[in-house]
Length: 470
Figure 1 (cartoon, rainbow, N blue to C red):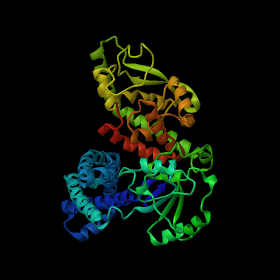
Figure 2: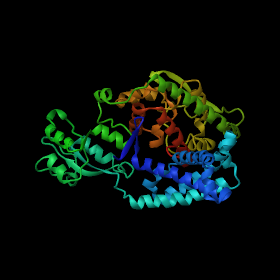
Figure 3: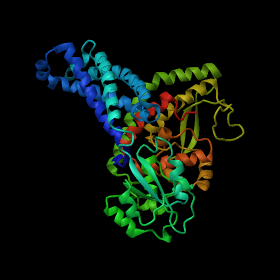
Figure 4: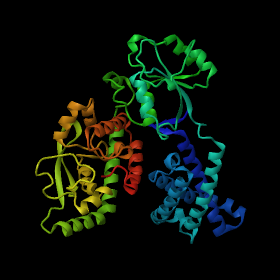
């Protein structure tokens, strides 16, 4: 199994294992730092471990949360171990003041965090121990150890989409593609080099090859599926999964071209209970209030910069109509990042290197400061902290006509940040909007307080590394 599913969200299993290893290693690093600072005797350490443990757990937990925010574990896939360790250094540095703040808040029961040099020593120990244990983990466990060998039944349009969309290392981190099996009378859209010849039956092929999963990606099931053959494979322990479900699991987005309204009706997800709704609202208020307190000095400096660039009479904010929950129109507030006459000829898509953007506006858009006034939209309930980004009514009307299921994104409140913002760059045309909708539908289908919290934490990476900003 290459993925675990927590509260309906798919998480890559090696990330979970690495996270647990890192957590234990950081507990060990902190314990070692305290041992050398205060004890120097193993028996004293054991006698006082019940006092030491809370501090060690808090130190480890804070560092893990910061590492998640900086995308440390995901960096291994695209940046290698060196990139992973560079982000780890940043995470350990950022965690130092946060651990200090934890001590000030908690007072007596985290007193080991206050020790002279303990946090610094623990971070240094942590860096070297993490490097050692991660190197051992990756040397003992090969890159393909957690990957399933997957055979795709079908060679038409749906199969081609799986081949084309799931080709990056990040999208293929959970599986190895064995090939595609074309069905009789099905148009073949797959290159011959990817096709697999099955001379007898799927079962016989599975018995002679290390196939752990068969993905059914047939364009028209009414023409018939080899159900008996698939049943025999399932009885051999091979997992049978629908193409749309496989695509969602591996890419963390919904394949618009593969799904129908029937799939939406019968698939799991797209449900919000009263308890989760209350939890989401509580998280919205907590996150918005925290961001308001932390960002208030930055907001004041931004207002001052806008006035200096455009004059004392120039407006600081601008408001626009956006489409919210159930299609209701509301006013969204932002710091003004364009000239005052930016839309004198009507509304147009924002674009890369947009000439209407001011110098201050160019900076605040890249680091997402222009979005901070939407905190008040979150507090007054017209927006959530996490959800699909709201769009303007005139564009929504066009997109509903052009893109199937686009209106479904209005089943939840729009958000200040969202799953699509983490996973995809800025959308400035219809095709990009279609791609972002795939991520938005994944969020709506699998939404939970845990997923919201994960998105909030990982938004830090978006801001720091300017992913998706324009």
